[in-house]
Amino acid sequence: MERVFSGAQPTGNLHLGNYLGAIRNWVALQKDFECIFCVVDMHAITVWQDPKELRSNIRELAASMIASGIDPEKHVLFNQSQVSAHAELAWIFNCVARIGWLNRMTQFKEKAGKHRENASLGLYAYPSLMAADILTYKATHVPVGEDQKQHLELARDIALKFNNDYEVEGFFPQPEPLILGPATRVMSLRDGSKKMSKSDPSEMARINMTDDADTLSKKIRKAKTDPEPLPSEAAGLEGRPEAKNLITIFAALTNSTVDKVLSEHGGTQFSGFKQALTDVVVTKLAPITEEMARLNNDNAYIDAVLAKGAERANAIAQPILRDVKETVGFLNS
Ligand code: AMP
Ligand code: TRP
Image 1 (cartoon, rainbow, N blue to C red):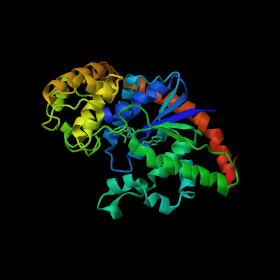
Image 2: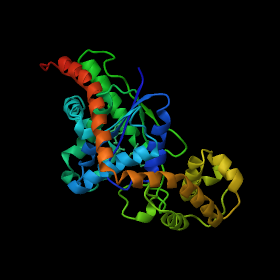
Image 3: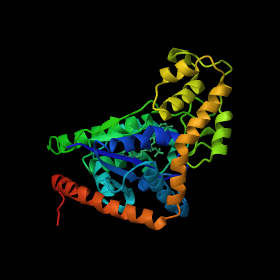
Image 4: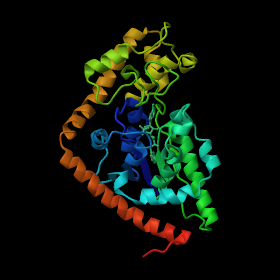
């Protein structure tokens, strides 16, 4: 039995990295897998969220998934906090995971920064909740961007330790990360060594899924580059992270490869290439942006989709959670 699970945090500023590294791949997987897609609102509150903004970000993220091509009829789309199995299994996993394992998580170190003592306990335990998200459906495949690979490895370790400790071999599967497409790590437009991120204070660093054509054009025109013309082959991108990023984005959006893009644009100046890139970005994003805007005016529809999705998710999760409780030695009524 193969099943896909993935999630994204409703923390606003959905950007091109989220689209190319995650959502676009989810859309493609719908053809071959049974899929469950989750707006992970419980993950979002590991750092402070204004309640009003959170509510609207949850709806907006669901809308952008639908606008990108997620089919909430054929597959399951819901928000995490409406299915209590996630929290229940996460607690059990908190008792399986070891502190030493969590201490190795690089994302926690990055997000907590210098003030680690002041980070929420939730931010620290977050990978254990993420393992619960996946395993409460016994999902086998998890499409994510590069940055989530370490969390996926932890989920595999938790699954294995649970199976070993409770002597239920094969109970939880070993979920496999699917890190797909040419753009698994889209970088900031201002600094090729940093990933494009929702939390970058500079709007100019990221391409938002809600940007209009003028904004896209300005951001791409001002994107950092170097003074050399484009190389003719991929090896020439070595040590030129900003150039590599723009070429990779172009290749991903045109379903091409870095080599093919360079064989066409090699030797040209960035000014011309940036114009071509702007055309591609605007053409590809405009239909999604328009549909997002339409859905953002229809809260009743989005709320109904999420409620129905939660019901279906719950129906899959409950029997698995019941087995887990039985295994652990809890009483099921
Ligand atoms: P998040 O917005 O952190 O919840 O991430 C949602 C999904 O987008 C995850 O699968 C991430 O791995 C992916 N993602 C986030 N930022 C990037 C990026 N800059 N490049 C590629 N994928 C990304
Ligand atoms: N941690 C992921 C991120 O920040 C989001 C996420 C939460 C997730 N639970 C998940 C992704 C389960 C895949 C599977 O991007």
